[in-house]
Length: 359
Image 1 (tube, rainbow, N blue to C red):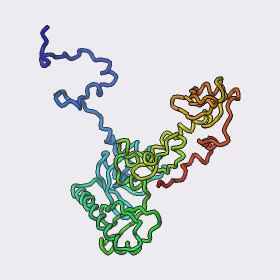
Image 2: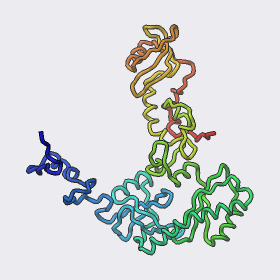
Image 3: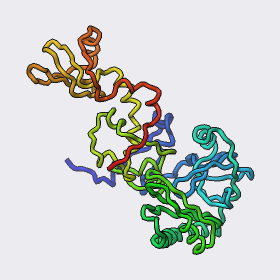
Image 4: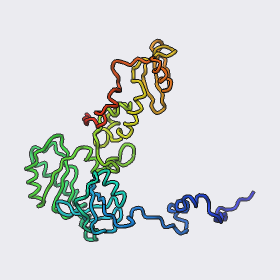
């Protein structure tokens, strides 16, 4: 049977609109991934452009630092556009990160509904953008020189300079550092002022804030959560891993910052709520096969793994079966629980526990 060449086969266009056309015509006819098609592209709405000038604008600066500004001049802005803003120490430059209704929602969620004190001055001109890029290119050399000067000052052995940031008008230079304890850097600050001839601000940050500013890829292969969508870095304790029944392998539980991963908090509330329906580990269950001890919980599949005390054989029960045994009073709770069940629903446990150091 002869076959026609592929280039001789053509599919005629549909004469009547299909169901996909009526439901999502822009998605059905979108051919952005096809470079060989010469069909006219539909005009999709630009979601990054405000339909009208936004009175509130969120601006992102270097190191994923964000702030809310007013737009008194009613400038039509786009997301990602470079703008000049007023700050208490002068004029700075940043990129627009939110406009319109999104900025208003962020005002209520992240800024406690407070009106911004600072304002947008103007859009960045080519000269403003050139100055902004010049500052960014100079900052690695500034950081390198600041580290060299730190070696000449005694008492700064535990101080680790992390990042340098020029304000756009170069009236202020910010140096970020981490240190295990408080550092007396007065002599070092005078040395920096003499060298750079500008106002210097030394800001001590935590390990999580350092990873947030520098960015990077996590063990999951994605960009760090703290440098993308997390607004604040909350402390994480080992109890979060204990409640989720994770192995205490600090190499796998810690992130690039050397602290416990922030993602340990994502499903913590789910496990807290689910564990209220389970008896704790080492509880004694009187089954038809004999007394057995709970050795493992599988919350996702709602299974409990037990070990018979007389024979040592494994036994698997569902959550529904355990609930029936509990109603008949056939479960004896141990004197001490490994998962600390009584503290799961207390008010003190709603706040994140204090940060634990990793050795």
